[in-house]
Length: 203
Length: 243
Image 1 (spheres, chains in turn orange, brown):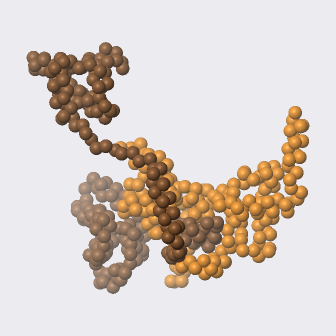
Image 2: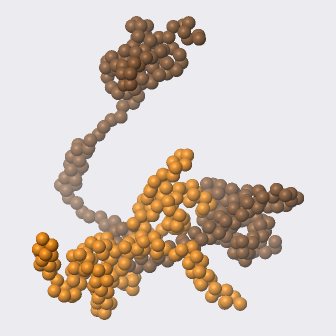
Image 3: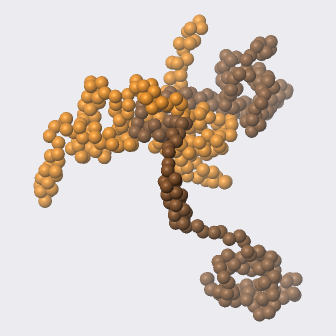
């Protein structure tokens, strides 16, 4: 029984002759996918037994995109892989599509998002307390942009909504998961590095 | 104190009171953990005085912090007794909020950097999703097309399942009169029978509430022999009511 099924799979699996063909197929999948493609979705299909086999295909593909000086690159985001344009083309693309302004998050929204990202799940009143200002507006705005969601209700009087970040949040900032955000210690280090040079200049 | 007037604070915009406090602390080159409160408080108040044309709901937040600052300052000016814990905890609380807020600001800067990087990486449907192109191109449409659009809109409208919510026809007051006269007439009310004569669920609900209300005010007595069984309602006799 086992032998037979194995044999069948082997026959079915003989789809790709070499690495190059796998890369070709990977490129096609990534090209048509709107969202990042999760490795587990295509690993089996690309006959990868181990994650390392898959990583090799990805690596080769990345190299190729780099070597041939193409307009697109491969990025890792939201726990998957996605094709994007190369950053150096940004200005040219803007010109071509005649885009002058693009919407970025406002400072209050960024602050609110920072709190939710690090403290989730968190209520509106906790956010407002931490910011020292009422944060209803930014929370609404972030909900609308789907960067946050209501993930539950806090078991205190009034059952206030608890907010958490979404998958869109990860994609928006190019994160694979929340652990990629710097820890609070790393944060202090990061900013000490940034602040020190200016200190020396003053002396 | 003389230096204060030299600040060009009017041109700066602060997200909130904590933002302003942090800014003042930085300007004075103080350590968050070791703030000269009286100095910061006066700076803060000067800023509030020079501020013009702000949104009152925002100003409210600024005033709360101002009152906290003044409270801490005035407490610290009073002769110290042993029980000064109140002041210390208020001060500690403020310092902690400031440290927290300082962190939030740093994270926001970081997130902004990440956002700026991501914006240069264009993805599928990036243009429609993230870019605001204010210009709309007008397209010429023939009158036939216009009519077609209009009729398809009408058709869509027909398909819509519209349900109406009727306004409240029943009031407890009216129901009460009805039930009282009915009980005068019959001597008792068989609740199940009564409900069956009613037209809709709302009427039944109001009747039930009214009966409960009448029992509460000691006008009616109700008896239910078993769970989910029928309910019989009587009028309470005057002598029973007095007891």
